[in-house]
Image 1 (cartoon, rainbow, N blue to C red):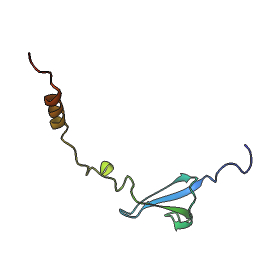
Image 2: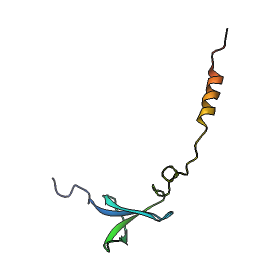
Image 3: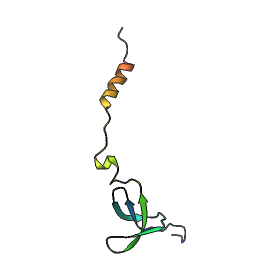
Image 4: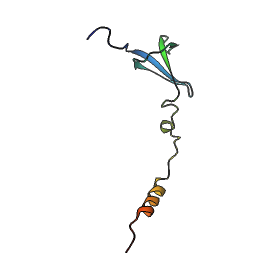
Length: 83
């Protein structure tokens, strides 16, 4: 590999402050903040606005739309007229 052309791939903490969800994973993202992780080491911190810990799809609080009503409405609108 060529030297100096690859980004710095290192452990980074991603933290969603809306629900206090955090995960330690590897990334090349550049950050200016740091955080002390559960193992006592300091890692770069990336603040998140939404994550799997707060997104309605992953938390099970997602509202389902009435798909059957929309299908019936479509069929009624575009049904072939009986001759």
